Length: 343
Image (cartoon, rainbow, N blue to C red; front, side, top):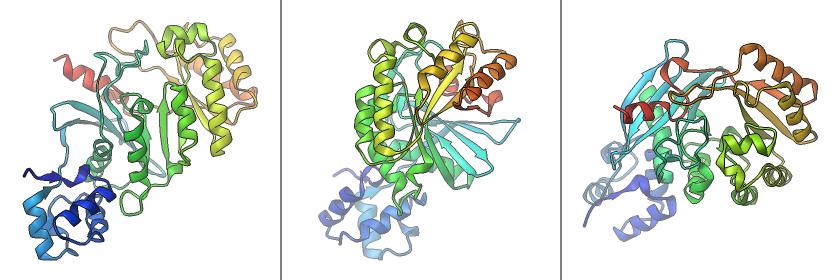
C-alpha cells in the first residue's frame, strides 16, 4: 500500500483516513493544524500520541513543494518564487510587503488558456489546473521561506481561477479555516478575465471575497482585440454578472485596467469607461502595462496614466494607480516561468 500525502486531503477526508487506520477522527483537527503551521514531520506534532505517530509514519507523509528559483527585488521587499511541483511543472508566486502585512499572489493553473494579447502567462497555453492543495502549498512555502505570516492572498498569478472552479472554492475555504490559514474572506481577492457563468455561480457561494475583473477596455471593439474571451462573453454580459455579484455579496468589485499606449489610454476611452461603470459599486485599478518581450504593446506614459486617472476620478469613479512592485525581478505573472522555459 503506497503512502498517502495528508496535505492533499480535506479535513473530512483526513478524518476518514484516521478511521481506516483505527484512530479517532478528532485527531484530524490536530494534524490539520500542524500541516498548516508548515510542519511536515509527525514526530514534531507534540500533541499526538506515539502510537499514532508510528501509524502515520507507516501509512502517510506530508509533502512540500520546492523553491526552484527565488528572486528578491533590490527596489522593495518583493520576492518572486518559481516553485517546482511534483510532476516537474513550474508555477510562480509573489510575496509582497505592505504596511498592513504580507500579501501572497498565487497561481491557479500551470500556464493559461485565455490568450490575452499583452500577457506573458498565456504563452505556451494552459498545461493543467492546480489542485487546491497546491495553491495552499504556494502560501505555505512563502511563509516557510520568509518566516512571515501571510495576511492577505490574491489569486492573480498565472491561470484563470474560475476555469479551475472546484479546486479554487476548496482552496478559499481552507484559507478561511481557523485551524488552517485563518484568513478572512475579505482579505482574499480572486481575479478573473470574465467567465460569466462562474461569476454568477461564485456570487451564490456565500464566500464574500473581493472579485477583481480584468476589463482592460471600455468597449467590445478594443476588448475583442486584447482578450479573446470577450467574443464569448461581451462586456454587456460581463457587467450583468458583476452587478449580480455585487447584489448578492454586497461587495465592491475591482475592475483592472492595464493602460496600453495608443490602444486603450485615450481621453475618449476614459470617458467611455466612466459612463460604462457609473452607478456601480466598483473600484478601478489602473495598471501601467508590464512590457513583455515579443509583444507589440507599450505602456502608457506617466502623464497619460495621470490624465486617465483624473478623468475617472472627476467622474465619480473610485480609482487608483497600482503601485509597481518587483519590476526589476519580472514580478508580473508569467514573466519568470516564460523566461525559464525558453532557456
